Length: 176
Image: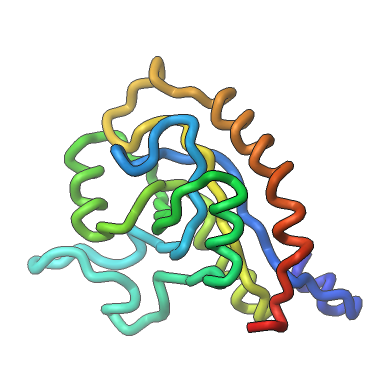
């Protein structure tokens, strides 16, 4: 879509990645909203004898994108959301041990999901800023399907989007 719009001479001004995700307790409880101040590919890299090395540490690219600061704060304020890193993972965390490892590597993380970094990479290729919003459906850690609150998270996201539009309409990326 980004390429087609650019080729048609109507490029996007902003890409918004939104959905549900797991929340790192106590910072992001079930039903709350998180706005990413950093979008991180948390498990893109290599395990070595000395531990995990990110793609950036290996010299092969970036593992982080930063949404515009002058947009993150007003969006978070309007939504009543917390701001912090949202981790993109290729496998959803299912153990307390894995959650602890991610928290140690990414102490500002509030949520994990699976799409944000890919969306941010596509936006970056086109020079378009990106925003990621996540509604928390479950805690990050041991998989307990009985604790999932997907309908509640989707309702929170829907309500949040009603508050998001005026903020986006007033934001001018060219003021940066």
